[in-house]
Image (cartoon, rainbow, N blue to C red):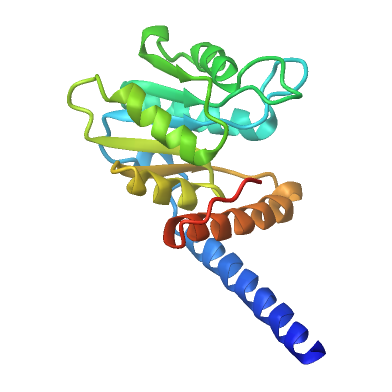
Length: 200
């Protein structure tokens, strides 16, 4: 019995390690330079934490900076995504809209999705908001670098032609963010290939 348990634990560790290694490899290949973005028809910015005082967290600010830089080069519709968490004073999308306007993005170019609570919902709701706009063929997904490979996978699953722009992750949060993203990849594969619904 102990040998079986030990074997299962070892298999689990090896599996998590393989996912983490794959994440690091995928992350090493992403674009982090707005000037290198190919022609797109819309930009989708994924949400992150809003602080209790209503200002964006560092991680969210970095995503918004990257999105604003991309928009300056290609003035296309921008979708901001994110619901209101229990410790947040407003939906992430609403805060993101105001912050992008402060960064120079035109108000009438910003669409908001204040209802999505995870990356999959972000992508699906953004696609629905963009659907009525003619000639939207290729989108740019903007999020943190560690998060971008899975966001692009979900965009492809939703039928979107997408490329990505990654914003940096603060070094002190690197381990925490990558550990969480490793688990999120496991959830993604279980739901996609085994049709197992997991709520975390």
